[in-house]
Length: 461
Image (cartoon, rainbow, N blue to C red; front, side, top):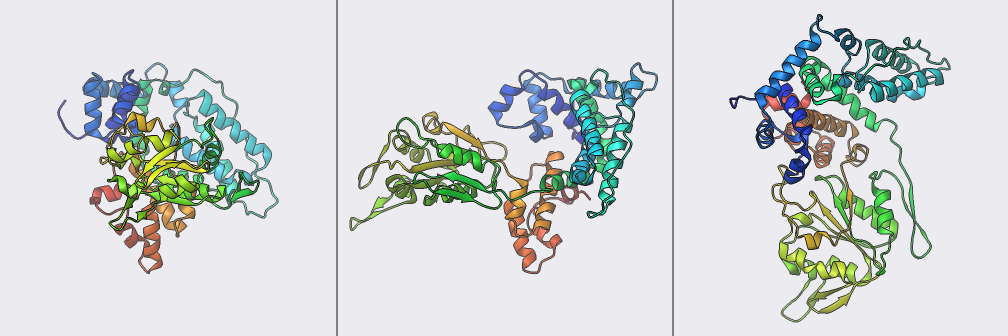
């Protein structure tokens, strides 16, 4: 096959073939990449390593598509009955969840029953009747005034026999879905917007309470990351040696690791300190100047007197710095420039990183492979992924934040490797507050560096 550019549909077909290959799991772990992040070049490389014939795979998908759309082909009637693609049905489900609280119990239960049937017994492929019922019910509920007493009632479609799962339950079916995808691209932008809105719909502030060692109760009010409660529970655990477990937070840039660690410290009633990328040991352990005075660091303060300290971006630290921490992290003492110091029982150490310490990735090329002896000192690891509701809450401009989130979803769907994160939401909000328009803020933040074609793709234009 020539090195011609692959279409979006062809990339989806190859991604499906790669995901279904027996070697995919090992390949993904070795290269630290998800299937959705495979661009055309990476798809070709993965296919070559896994001995996947690209031309044969694409040809098979085209034949499957033609067979499914040929009215004379056996099984066509069943395919027609299941002609609503998962992506389209998913948009209707999103609309349903947004207005479900306005429906009467009967209509809501009927919708939920249809959704469960489609998702669990039909691999996400719905019939036109099922889609129509969900859409009509949601539309009537949406049009109903919030204060109206009239319940929303819609006649459910006739019960339909459940047959074998459609072709999307195997790799060939996944390839077929990818071939059909271009025909529903017209609904891509509004569907993504609906998904983003659904994630934020009905978001409520949550109060988290945690018992402290002195018997008092620490509280976190307002918006917080969904994993904050998990982090607090983990940090409250004491090991047999009397120390708290060292916890490793792994998440993309601007996912809120520092914010979460700070909230945890406040809830636990501890002081909070943090270190960024460390290139030299004295930045972490402190140093003695010419007159003989020792200069302390946040790590020393927490280690000696108790408190929470975050070792952030630890996968970008110099190896000599991380290795110097091994004794402090595991043995309960550390050698500082002014002497040996014992670890305080209330010292809590959190590591933060964009990777699991296995080396550079396509997104984080400056990350180092961490020594396994160092990694083993953080036996508890928590995935700390971006939370849409928290991003909006701390953005400073909810409307612009949702615009950026929708753009990020479009970029992901298109396989575009372009960083779009919460920091751009906050910067854009500040620009708008200073008098810039939303479009101007977008040009200077998440759209910066993109070509005209990429901008249209990201903006859904």
